[in-house]
Image (spheres, rainbow, N blue to C red):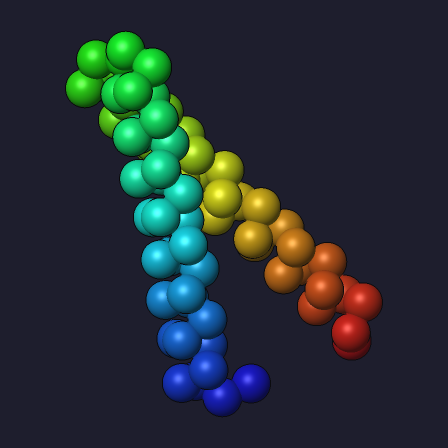
Length: 65
């Protein structure tokens, strides 16, 4: 795979995880959570999104090879 394509995919995954985390933080604040609680929820969603994408990529790589 081309180096540029790999960097572009990493950037897209990072932005998607960041968007999901921002949404989770906003929903947490609307639910009445404090700022530290909202940040903790956002961090958990960010980590879960990155982990999910890494798992899907690993499975796809195994199936396509």
